[in-house]
Amino acid sequence: MSNEPITLTAGDAEATVLPGNGGRIGGLRVGGAELLRQGERYGCFPMVPWCGRIREGRFRDGAVVHRMPLNSPPHAIHGTARDAAWRTARVTTDEAVLTYDLTDPWPYSGRVTQVIALTGDALTLTMSVETYESSFPAQIGWHPWFNRTLDGTGVEIAFDPAWQEERGDDHLPTGNRIDPKPGPWDDCFGMPDGVDVTLTWPERLELKVTSREEWVVVYDEQEAAVCVEPQTGPPDGLNTLPRLVTPLEPLEATTTWRWTRL
Image 1 (tube, rainbow, N blue to C red):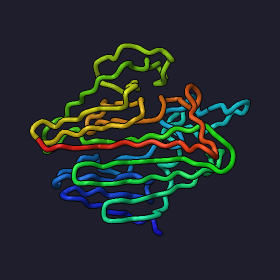
Image 2: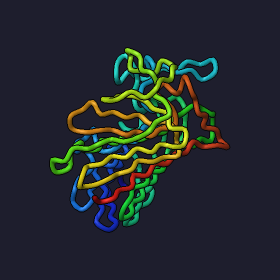
Image 3: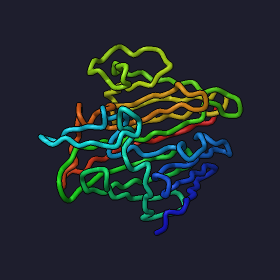
């Protein structure tokens, strides 16, 4: 199938999926209100086969050191799939299935599958990475850019993490866990019982971002948008907390955004 834009609908919710632009969600409208920042780099993109920054673009797999392009010098950031065209495998009125085959500069072969499912009050994103050849470390995550304001109403962020990853001057975790600090943030937090972050636009909408994963990056240093990024490990996790994809065991993750009108 082609990689043309896809529109999903359910009730008064509408999601635009852009397979040709990194498999990202280009827009999510609820009752006509657009929740995601618009623009080629924004919306919500999948982070795979890694999330956040890799220190100096280098990660080790056993005795082998691999180097990724430094697309956020001096580091590599957010994976390779967001810069590629994905293929549309299946589409219905309220669900799309996309695939992307890992290729250069990533040194391993594998397939990424993303399922985007819309209901009248939620969007659920599921992603898996599988291989039939060599095992390799990987991460999965999503990077949504939620609009800071809806019709002039500013967003409030609420969550209760168990810890915050101390961030060094290089924007990477130092390895120390600290008590959560007040924002603004560009930081990774641990939520061992699963990611659970609530965005509230008072008198407009409440949106809960949840995931079974225990890591979330919250970024609210930008004037136009806030980001709540569930992921399977912390930044630089290919080096510090690798999750292996093997022929017998794919890596899978899911996040749900559920909204309530206020």
